[in-house]
Amino acid sequence: MLKYDANGLIPAVVQDATTREVLMVGYMNRESVQRTVETGQAWFWSRSRRELWHKGATSGHYLNVRAIRVDCDGDTLLVEAEPAGPTCHTGAVSCFFNELEAADVRPTPAAEPATAALAAAEAPDPGPAAPLDGRAVETLFAVIQERQRLRPEGSYVAKLLDAGVDRIAKKIGEEATEVVIAAKNGDHGEITWEVADLWFHSLVLLAASGLTPAAIWEELDRRRR
Image (cartoon, rainbow, N blue to C red; front, side):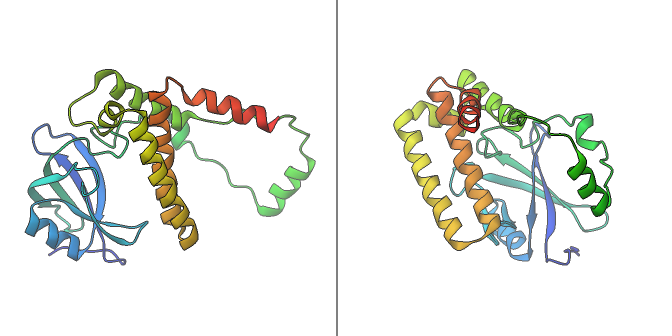
């Protein structure tokens, strides 16, 4: 018997049925589990949009399920699937393409509120702000450049690049509209999701245009100064 959490969800780890590579982790509720079993394709529950999510319904990159296993505690699923294209929305085969760095796990001591306020008040003027940190963007852009160079079959990024700037620009227009709708709805999760889509497609446009995020950082830094 499956054990769902207090929100009625259960984590589902998706693994490539052939290569055994872990592709993604999502959450399912009772209905998405049922639809996955009935249709043979992976369905999830989107926590940000609070709705059922048929993986691949927009991109065509479906996850064709071959088996579903339950862990010994009954609170986690392992979905073995054959992906019809890259699983990650970035165009990567798997969502797990970043290495964990030591800085990511180093604990940061938390100061008492009064102490923190006093320290901030007494701190010397740091001078000009530090350059914008684009490490996460650069990591994603490196994946986009790899897809641009190799043009792997089934890659969403490669498909966009092959379609040309006009198609990419049209996609950006569509995503910008989604951002506007999300903003008017006032849903923070929806806004975050849609802005991420907008930024991602903007990075693809930069690659197609022979530019890099560094050009954007420089322009923003120029405006700030």
